[in-house]
Image 1 (cartoon, helix red, strand yellow):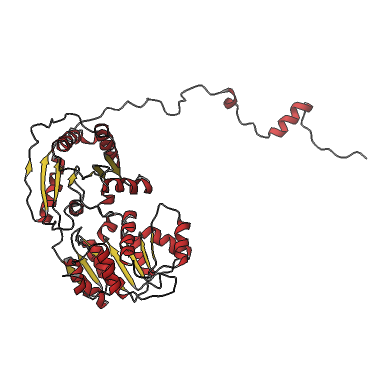
Image 2 (image 1 turned 90 degrees about the horizontal axis):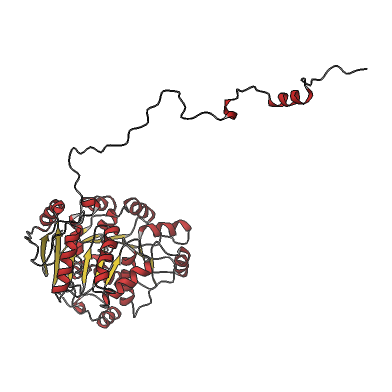
Length: 443
């Protein structure tokens, strides 16, 4: 459907025309009338299908001018990167509207954000933790919220935001419209919906866990970290189409290790991003990846939901994620906007259970290939990869054998003295040669 066929006003159509968008995606087309009706809604669609515009367009279509200071639309997202992304999407579509938009998240100066809120907002995009912090200061009041959007709610629950989400929901006015958008619908998410939503309409454009059809998936059976490193080097050296490669790692330490190994071979072409990096470093690294300065971006799942990275040629799962749903989000970074994408998985023996769960979720079988002939299998192992043999007993140094009450050394002379009591009396006795006592006064 063309955007002109939706009930959009001229200012929104002009903004869409400026950014080159003409046709609505399925989730945008199906969600628009539901959001416009004022009903609660749960939208399920894969990453990269336009979920953000699916709620921004109808919300802006209904938003009327108001001079009040407190925000009327609240969008909750799990990461700082996603705050910036969603706030920027709002700004693009309000080019010809008078709408005040702000984004707040942790790790930055709260006083600056308090000033933004004090000046007045219509739309507030926030992470849960910083939103609660600002509401406790008294500067931010949530009783004016009319529309609540929870984006990537399953990721919020994975990151431990459950109690904070519930606290925010309790602070909001009861009469409001609730919208939830995600790529997956887990049992925890359904519990949250049951407790806080009123007869929500479910809009699903593809079954939960279904990957985009235009992503070609394949994988290799790889035994350990350094063999994976050899395989990645081989692929980068032999495949020129790998010009924008996103590599997902399970934790920050492994991400830094992989960066150090690759950066020596491909100086200035490798970037790394995880939660220990500063906000400015994260934004700068992603920008350099977007403009082609960096050929490879190594990342933990912190940006799997957090950044809209376009034209990614390959997504490589260097490590398998703990949750099968996270795999869907990872590979959704490629094959966006109807473009073709490639996703590769490096699967070790320890990952076989996770790999089976991922295939079951996708309802798809992916055959793992053997290592290419030019890739050497490394015998070097990380400490976490070393196998502990069952029944292996570690001999510890025996504790010293001592008898009860026996000291390990002679006491010092000062500690040998018995407690004689009355130190003041002893001092007087030593001075006057006899105890000094008060006798009867002479007349």
